[in-house]
Length: 456
Image (cartoon, rainbow, N blue to C red):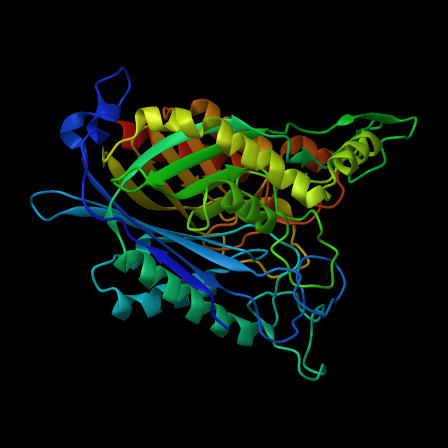
C-alpha cells in the first residue's frame, strides 16, 4: 500500500527579507528571487520478498522491519521576465542509484510535469544495505533470484520504484508554494572512519585495533550535521535537508527490509517537531566511513544501554539533538528571496591504472554527471561515487560558499573512489575501483570550479 505525504505552503508574511540584509560575502540582493518549495514522500518498500543488496552473500528478505522511503523536495525561483531556476531533489532509502533508473525516471517525468527541466532532477541514495537493487545483472550471479519462487526480481522492483518515486516528484512539484529557507550547522558523532592502518603500511576495512602492530585509523571523519530548513510563510517548519558524512548501515546484516538509522531519525524528529515535518537525508563523502566503531566499543555500548536505546536509536538521538540545537538559530537568518542557481555538469575522469574493477557493474564513468547548486550562501554538490572523505574535505576547504553540502551516490553509481594512501594500504574499498586518486583530484577541481562559477 502506498504511503504518500505532500505539503504546500500558502500566502506570504512580512519579515523574510530581514534574513537577506546586506552582509560581506552574501548574495547580491538584486539577483535574489522569491523561493517556491514543495515536499512529498512515497513508500518504496517492496511488497514481496527481494534479494537485499550490500553484503557479499545472498540474502532473501524475510519481512519488513521498517519502510523504505523516498523524500522529494521541489525548488524554484522565478523572475519577472518569465525565467526560472529549478530542481527536484529526491533522497531514497536504497544502496545506490543507477544511471538507467535516473534516465527512466526523467523520461517519465517529461510528460507528467512539462514545465520542469528533467535534467535538473537529482536522486541520491542513503546507502542502506537492507534494500533491493534495480538491475538483475548488476552483481552478476551473486543475487540471482530466478529460481527463488515468489521473490521479486531487481528489474521488477525498479518498475515499482519508478512508479512511486515519479509520483512523489510530481506531488512535490505541484505543491510548490512560497517558502522561506535558512541553514544550520550542528555536530553529532555518527560516521567513523572504518579503515585500520598497521605499521607495515597495510590497511583493512574494519581491521582489528587490538593488534600489537596497529598504528592508526587511516583517515579523517566529520561530526558535522549540515542542514537546510524550509518554512511556510506563517513560520511553520515544513521540512529539513540533513547531510551527514555517514552511510546508513548500522544494521546492515539484517535479513529484513529496512531504511536503517534514517528511519529512526525520521521517527525521532517527527516526535519532537511534528508528524508533518519532512526529512530529506543526504550522505556526504563517506566512502571510508560508516557508523561502526573500531575502538571504544564496549564503553559506547554501555552508555547506549544506560539510555535504554538501541544503537540506531542512539544515532537518531544525536542527529535530532543537533537539529534541535540549531533550529532556533536558523530562524534568525530566514530568507523568502534567495539567489538560486543549478548547474548540471559532466566531467571525464581518468581511470586508474592498472584497472581493478569492482565485483559489481558500475555505471559509465566517461563522462560522469554531477550537479552543483547555490541556494543563498549554501552550495550543494553531488557525485556518483562512494567518495573517500578526504576528497570531501578538499572540496569544502576550497569552496567559497559559507556552507557546502556534498552528496555522494547521486544519479548513478561508479563505485569506490579511494585516496592515494588508501590504495597504498589496500584492503576492501581500496582494492577494486575504476577511478583512483588522479581522477579523484580531477573531480575535486571540477567541483570547486563549478561552485566558484556560481559565486562570481
